[in-house]
Amino acid sequence: MNNKRSNPTTTRFRTKTGLNSQSGFGLIEFGILLIILVVIVLLAIPLYRDFTIAQKVAVGAGAAAEVKTLVAKNAAAGLNFDAGWTPPQAAADLAGIGINRDNGEISLNFGPDAGNGSLIFAPLLNGQPLSGGTDTSSPATGDAALTWNCNSAAAPETQLGTHGTLAGKYALLGCKP
Image (cartoon, rainbow, N blue to C red; front, side):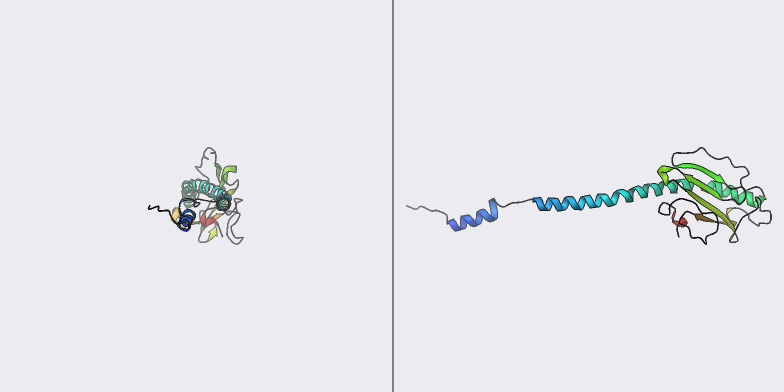
Protein backbone atom coordinates (compact mmCIF):
# COMPACT_ATOMS: atom_id res chain seq x y z
CA MET A 1 0.00 0.00 0.00
CA ASN A 2 1.14 3.25 -0.91
CA ASN A 3 -0.19 5.49 1.78
CA LYS A 4 1.19 8.92 1.16
CA ARG A 5 0.74 11.28 3.96
CA SER A 6 2.03 14.74 3.98
CA ASN A 7 4.81 15.65 6.25
CA PRO A 8 3.32 17.36 9.38
CA THR A 9 6.22 19.82 9.45
CA THR A 10 5.47 20.96 5.93
CA THR A 11 1.76 21.27 6.64
CA ARG A 12 2.34 23.44 9.68
CA PHE A 13 4.71 25.63 7.75
CA ARG A 14 2.22 26.12 4.93
CA THR A 15 -0.58 26.88 7.36
CA LYS A 16 1.36 29.60 9.18
CA THR A 17 2.56 31.43 6.09
CA GLY A 18 -0.15 30.72 3.59
CA LEU A 19 -3.77 29.94 4.19
CA ASN A 20 -4.27 31.07 7.78
CA SER A 21 -2.11 34.24 7.80
CA GLN A 22 -3.70 37.57 8.73
CA SER A 23 -4.02 40.32 6.18
CA GLY A 24 -5.26 43.92 6.31
CA PHE A 25 -5.05 46.50 9.06
CA GLY A 26 -4.89 45.61 12.67
CA LEU A 27 -6.40 47.69 15.41
CA ILE A 28 -3.14 49.59 16.06
CA GLU A 29 -2.60 50.42 12.40
CA PHE A 30 -6.19 51.60 12.08
CA GLY A 31 -5.82 53.79 15.17
CA ILE A 32 -2.65 55.39 13.81
CA LEU A 33 -4.33 56.04 10.48
CA LEU A 34 -7.31 57.61 12.23
CA ILE A 35 -5.04 59.89 14.30
CA ILE A 36 -3.20 61.03 11.17
CA LEU A 37 -6.48 61.83 9.41
CA VAL A 38 -7.79 63.78 12.39
CA VAL A 39 -4.61 65.89 12.54
CA ILE A 40 -4.82 66.63 8.81
CA VAL A 41 -8.47 67.68 9.09
CA LEU A 42 -7.79 69.86 12.14
CA LEU A 43 -5.05 71.68 10.24
CA ALA A 44 -6.95 71.96 6.97
CA ILE A 45 -10.22 73.47 8.23
CA PRO A 46 -8.75 76.77 9.56
CA LEU A 47 -6.49 77.10 6.53
CA TYR A 48 -9.42 76.58 4.20
CA ARG A 49 -11.52 79.13 6.10
CA ASP A 50 -8.72 81.71 5.87
CA PHE A 51 -8.30 80.93 2.17
CA THR A 52 -12.01 81.48 1.42
CA ILE A 53 -12.04 84.77 3.35
CA ALA A 54 -8.93 85.95 1.47
CA GLN A 55 -10.66 85.08 -1.82
CA LYS A 56 -13.72 87.14 -0.83
CA VAL A 57 -11.42 90.07 -0.01
CA ALA A 58 -9.70 89.71 -3.40
CA VAL A 59 -13.05 89.82 -5.19
CA GLY A 60 -14.06 92.89 -3.20
CA ALA A 61 -10.74 94.59 -3.93
CA GLY A 62 -11.37 94.05 -7.63
CA ALA A 63 -14.32 96.39 -7.28
CA ALA A 64 -11.90 99.18 -6.34
CA ALA A 65 -10.38 99.33 -9.85
CA GLU A 66 -13.20 101.47 -11.24
CA VAL A 67 -13.09 103.72 -8.19
CA LYS A 68 -9.31 104.21 -8.54
CA THR A 69 -9.84 105.39 -12.11
CA LEU A 70 -12.50 107.88 -10.98
CA VAL A 71 -10.22 109.30 -8.24
CA ALA A 72 -7.34 109.64 -10.72
CA LYS A 73 -9.53 111.46 -13.27
CA ASN A 74 -10.93 113.79 -10.62
CA ALA A 75 -7.40 114.57 -9.37
CA ALA A 76 -6.27 115.37 -12.90
CA ALA A 77 -9.30 117.62 -13.45
CA GLY A 78 -8.89 119.40 -10.10
CA LEU A 79 -12.28 118.16 -8.83
CA ASN A 80 -13.21 116.79 -5.43
CA PHE A 81 -11.93 113.24 -5.33
CA ASP A 82 -15.44 111.85 -4.87
CA ALA A 83 -17.08 113.93 -7.63
CA GLY A 84 -19.42 111.79 -9.69
CA TRP A 85 -19.25 108.91 -7.24
CA THR A 86 -22.37 106.93 -6.43
CA PRO A 87 -21.69 104.24 -3.83
CA PRO A 88 -22.89 100.78 -4.89
CA GLN A 89 -25.35 98.70 -2.91
CA ALA A 90 -23.80 96.74 -0.07
CA ALA A 91 -23.27 93.05 -0.75
CA ALA A 92 -22.92 90.10 1.60
CA ASP A 93 -19.12 90.20 1.65
CA LEU A 94 -18.43 93.83 0.73
CA ALA A 95 -20.41 96.00 3.12
CA GLY A 96 -19.45 99.26 1.43
CA ILE A 97 -17.02 101.29 -0.64
CA GLY A 98 -16.25 104.90 0.10
CA ILE A 99 -14.03 107.72 -1.16
CA ASN A 100 -12.52 110.24 1.24
CA ARG A 101 -13.18 113.58 -0.45
CA ASP A 102 -10.19 115.22 1.28
CA ASN A 103 -7.40 112.81 0.33
CA GLY A 104 -8.88 110.42 -2.25
CA GLU A 105 -8.45 107.32 -0.12
CA ILE A 106 -10.75 104.46 -1.05
CA SER A 107 -12.07 102.38 1.82
CA LEU A 108 -13.44 98.89 1.31
CA ASN A 109 -15.45 97.67 4.28
CA PHE A 110 -15.91 93.91 4.53
CA GLY A 111 -18.64 92.06 6.39
CA PRO A 112 -18.21 89.31 8.99
CA ASP A 113 -17.96 86.55 6.36
CA ALA A 114 -15.05 88.35 4.68
CA GLY A 115 -12.78 89.30 7.55
CA ASN A 116 -14.92 92.01 9.19
CA GLY A 117 -12.52 94.89 8.62
CA SER A 118 -11.50 97.61 6.20
CA LEU A 119 -8.88 97.84 3.49
CA ILE A 120 -7.69 101.31 2.47
CA PHE A 121 -6.23 102.23 -0.93
CA ALA A 122 -4.28 105.48 -0.53
CA PRO A 123 -3.37 107.41 -3.71
CA LEU A 124 0.13 108.84 -3.97
CA LEU A 125 1.41 111.37 -6.46
CA ASN A 126 5.20 111.45 -6.75
CA GLY A 127 5.35 109.41 -3.54
CA GLN A 128 3.25 111.87 -1.52
CA PRO A 129 -0.40 111.57 -0.40
CA LEU A 130 -2.99 113.69 -2.15
CA SER A 131 -4.62 116.34 0.01
CA GLY A 132 -6.95 119.30 0.04
CA GLY A 133 -10.05 117.85 -1.58
CA THR A 134 -8.84 118.96 -5.00
CA ASP A 135 -5.38 118.69 -6.43
CA THR A 136 -5.20 121.40 -9.11
CA SER A 137 -1.42 121.59 -8.90
CA SER A 138 -0.94 117.92 -9.74
CA PRO A 139 0.26 116.95 -13.18
CA ALA A 140 -1.79 113.74 -12.88
CA THR A 141 -3.11 112.59 -16.19
CA GLY A 142 -5.06 109.50 -15.28
CA ASP A 143 -4.41 106.35 -13.31
CA ALA A 144 -0.85 105.87 -14.60
CA ALA A 145 0.42 108.99 -12.79
CA LEU A 146 -0.89 107.82 -9.42
CA THR A 147 0.42 104.96 -7.37
CA TRP A 148 -1.63 103.27 -4.70
CA ASN A 149 -0.70 102.05 -1.24
CA CYS A 150 -2.89 99.22 -0.06
CA ASN A 151 -3.15 99.41 3.73
CA SER A 152 -4.49 96.71 6.01
CA ALA A 153 -3.99 96.43 9.76
CA ALA A 154 -0.69 94.66 8.99
CA ALA A 155 0.71 97.51 6.89
CA PRO A 156 3.95 98.97 8.27
CA GLU A 157 3.60 102.22 10.21
CA THR A 158 5.94 103.91 7.75
CA GLN A 159 3.57 103.25 4.85
CA LEU A 160 1.75 106.41 3.80
CA GLY A 161 -2.02 106.67 4.08
CA THR A 162 -4.63 105.62 6.58
CA HIS A 163 -4.35 102.04 7.77
CA GLY A 164 -7.30 99.69 7.51
CA THR A 165 -8.55 97.27 10.14
CA LEU A 166 -8.58 94.06 8.08
CA ALA A 167 -6.29 91.37 9.51
CA GLY A 168 -3.11 90.90 7.51
CA LYS A 169 -3.74 87.21 6.88
CA TYR A 170 -6.82 88.12 4.82
CA ALA A 171 -5.32 91.10 2.98
CA LEU A 172 -4.09 91.13 -0.58
CA LEU A 173 -0.44 90.35 -1.16
CA GLY A 174 0.40 94.02 -1.78
CA CYS A 175 -1.30 95.02 1.47
CA LYS A 176 0.95 92.94 3.70
CA PRO A 177 4.32 93.98 5.08
